[in-house]
Image (cartoon, rainbow, N blue to C red; front, side, top):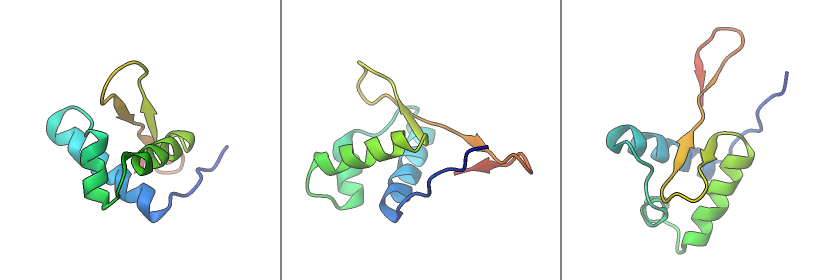
Amino acid sequence: MTSQIPLTRQQARALHYIEAYTEASDCAPPYEQIMHHMGLKSKSGVHRIIMALEERHRIRRIPHRARAIAVIKTTCPHCGGEIN
């Protein structure tokens, strides 16, 4: 069994924002909105966070599509509840 790499505060904040936005609008937020929500000065910071979330298997980016980020729901092997 592999354990998940913990998220930084910024990564967790971005993940929660992406989840909430996706649930409300059925699509992922644009990088510019994530940038403003996070208080970042450039979209490259958002890209870095998105890449880190993908490396940690918390999101999946769909290639060749705009705003195509899928949050990966993981379940606890002990209780079956969602982990995020």
